[in-house]
Image (tube, rainbow, N blue to C red; front, side, top):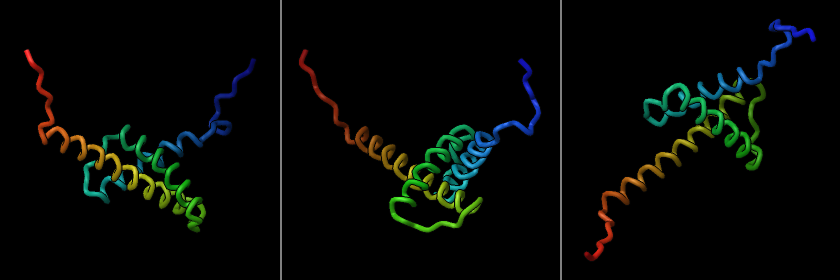
Length: 107
C-alpha cells in the first residue's frame, strides 16, 4: 500500500468550507454589531449559514453571482439570518427568566 502525501491529491473542499465558514460567520456578526462567536463559533455559524443561505436563494429563486463572491454573499446572508434567530432565542430566554415565573410549592 503506497500512500501519496503530496498536496496535489489533497481534497481542499474541507479547507475551503472552514475558510468560508469562518469568514462569513465573522462578517455576519460584525454587520449585526457583535464581536463574533470566537474562531470555532464563527466557523459553525458560517457553515450552517452558508447552507441556509444557498437553500434560501434556491427556494426564493434569487440569482447570485457564481464563484467566490456569490458563495460569500449567500453564506453571509444565511449567517445573518441564523445569528438573528440565535439572538432572538437568547432574548426570549432572558425575558422569560426576568418576568419571575416561579412556581410556589407548599411545605
